[in-house]
Image 1 (cartoon, rainbow, N blue to C red):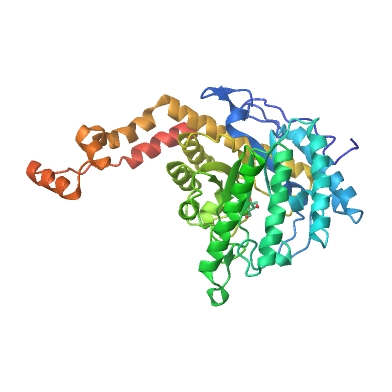
Image 2: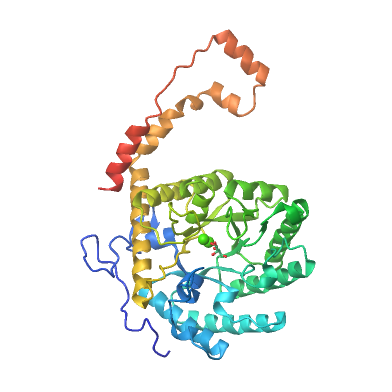
Length: 440
Ligand code: XLS
Ligand code: CA
Ligand code: CA
């Protein structure tokens, strides 16, 4: 492979908490066994191709600030291969176990569907070849059904059935690509599946279309024997003002309605949770309780802004709360921690991209280790268990299991003259315990 912009960076190594090397892992020791398996298998970190290699730093007020060799004018397929070479070199530097991509990130589009799909498969073959000499695997593939003007009124929910069909064809080929590359998951983020104004929108019709589309995806998964998970990624707004996949609970209701709740799980993003007015851990706990927890997009928003800034995470408290809920939800399984995060537009040096990922990986690792320690030690869980201990009695269990009707419960409560006493929720005691554990 020819030289890339990352060639002169050595692989980042675990050096332990006392290291002062800015490009070392202080907490992420991939081989460290915790809760019965190596940390790398719990966290399954992934680099997002779009933010790391396709993002130019432009914003509504200014043009590109990030200039990579593959962004120069030239033959689009040659440039896409140059980009892929750099991407896999970057994975080498981080020791990244996984990556994620959209079709549009890896392959140039053409005016025709056939031309675009041909380029996609050329580049998928190229990535497949690169993966034979790399440790990095595919966490998930997805389709960009939101950037091109044809998707301005949605993909599956577009009023034009030809856009539905174009989207179906694209997803079919992206699922084939994901399977060819051994991907663990296929993700659907409904970028423009929502509306800007109800004045021109038939919501009932659009929801039918979206349900049919997802059912077709699930059918195709079984048809080709794809062993990975199908994941829907909730987001409440941006780019549309009302997105149909608002949050984990909304997606669950939608899946139930179309009988897909056993087939599809969610890919939860921190910044999308906060845009929905939730915490990241709320979304993880909700998905865990509903049995649809799939994977994570790791990032953070800016609480003073209120849009999707996709910054790298740096808050240990928040991440520890999230990781605690991940463990309680049964772990990431086939999912992983994908850095759906981008460097700021002033951070245009290749080195900035490495610093960003090293910090994010280390933060997640530290948070996971603390969450695992909290669980192993048991003090925190025992406070919660004690709070619900009343439900352990046979009588309470009978009530929960539906063995007593409302009037039977009423009759018994009156006969026993029950008099429940208020009990402390112990919030401050818990907060003090967590502060001690997280910052020690
Ligand atoms: C955008 C989404 C997107 C999905 C993949 O806000 O986060 O990047 O993760 O299409
Ligand atoms: Ca995302
Ligand atoms: Ca986002």
